Image (cartoon, rainbow, N blue to C red):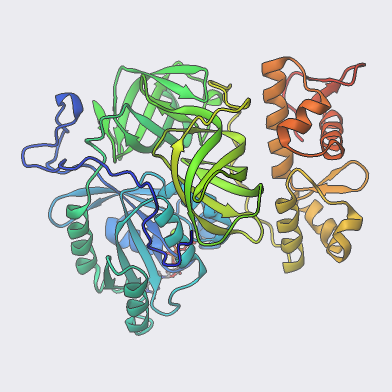
Length: 519
Ligand SMILES: Nc1nc2c(ncn2[C@@H]2O[C@H](COP(=O)(O)OP(=O)(O)OP(=O)(O)O)[C@@H](O)[C@H]2O)c(=O)[nH]1
Ligand SMILES: [Mg+2]
């Protein structure tokens, strides 16, 4: 059960219905004809190692500088997803998503790559294939993104020959083009290669399923209200219709739909879409949530049955990081068969059968592979419908400079998750605790344990969910829910008491304390 070759076909891949490109307009299920084109809409996503020139190439191809944040400008790296329309010489327009290459922003990369139809893998001629080149290829493989083009850029700086050869070996099916964002050399060839590849790629527009959009951004526009964006995975979103907001329990009316800043009556699968939602507060929806049309076969679930192709084995009940849609959550992987696993997630996912997932090792972080969901609601007592939507996640702060030892300690705390080590257990690594606490990347639990803040946020979500559903949280209930020991469940609950998230009652059970406080 190994995927030795990175472009190995995963088991159980879903095939999309074909035949969406025909002269005179693309006809969608129900007889609707797509506006403005003879081609099915497609979204292309960049991929590749940090600093290899993805954003520069996007700008050279589209005229749009997608690194808009001051922090992105100051640091010279991409931090959040960027979007631009890509007009090809033959007249076809693709949606383009630019992703970050930083290894610590892989979660953002997966959120951007999810739902794309083809890739634009960027390799710098002067640097060649690097770790995130390979990791991004594994992500694309896991997401079943088969079509794409490799750009060996910065060919003004070095002979592109070796990188071209390496790329052809890694992705034999892809066209490989040498180019330079700086001089413009090769850009016309690159656009032509993208056009040829797009012509061979079947879009999702003919997928008969109802609308499903995994939200990657939420913002408010004065006078308009809440707007969310995402790549439409399936179906059509029309102005005026009512959609479910999952995990719910909200619904909202579509006040307006835009595709690349242009108002449209409806958007089709394969497009980058901005949806203005009437009657929905900004706080009621967050990145990672899903907009779904009536009867979309999506489940809010803590248990997924998945067929995985991994290039490294997993231990029994190993804790992994699971990426699906625009969400990520730690999960325990329990083997059910040769390639079939049950993934028990710590946070809910909103999934449908046939969706793709990416599985990462927690420490040291690496993409192990991925696969296809064979049962989105695999039962178990934690599977529930319509959980209340979590509060919007704050923007990811810039990682402050920490030395290698501190970063190693952080990785160790992150890997330990809800079972934080004590100072004694950390041994020599404990020397970096002070720096990590100062950077807000470690939290003291009880007298001597140290946890990663992400783990505490996860526990807090679990506690809040149980308390909302059941009125209270007991130590035994939390222990079972987290699949951990009494020692850790108790320490974590006491931490939440101290942080005034929970209040301890005389019988030792906990209730929520009203307005959210910071942990
Ligand atoms: N000489 C030369 N420099 C380039 C070229 N493309 C990009 N650069 C430079 O390489 C650096 C990195 O480029 P970016 O486009 O930000 O790289 P990136 O892949 O988007 O980086 P991340 O998004 O952080 O992963 C910048 O200083 C660019 O000006 C090129 O074709 N030739
Ligand atoms: Mg970039």
